[in-house]
Length: 135
Image (cartoon, rainbow, N blue to C red; front, side):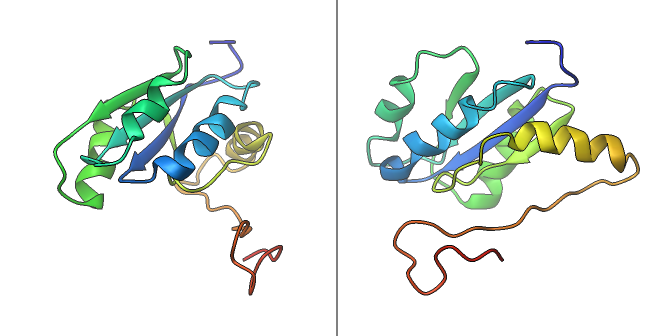
C-alpha cells in the first residue's frame, strides 16, 4: 500500500467472462496512485477464468471460486472478502479508465456525507449504435 488513503476494494464478480476478464483486471491494476485490492469472485465458471487470473503475478489480485449460484450471491461474496473501507464495483467485461480511483478519492473528499457514487458509462468495443457516447 502506498499510504495515499483508505483501502479501496475493487470487486470483480465473474461468470464465464474469461474473454474480457484480463482487460478488466489490467485496468484495475493500473490504478497505481491509490491503495487498492482487487477481488475476483468466480461464480463457478466453466471457461478458463481461473487461468486468466493465474496469469497475473500481482499480490493485489485475489481469486475466490464458489459454486455457481447467481449474481447476487457472487456480489455478496465479494463484499464478504473485501477488506477496504470503500467498494468500487467493476464488471468482468468492463474497464476502469486511468485515474478512476484517484478521482473516486477526490470525490469522496468533496462529498463526505454521500454513500454511493455512480460514474458515466462509456460503451466501447462492438456496440456500434452507442460507441463513443457517454451515458
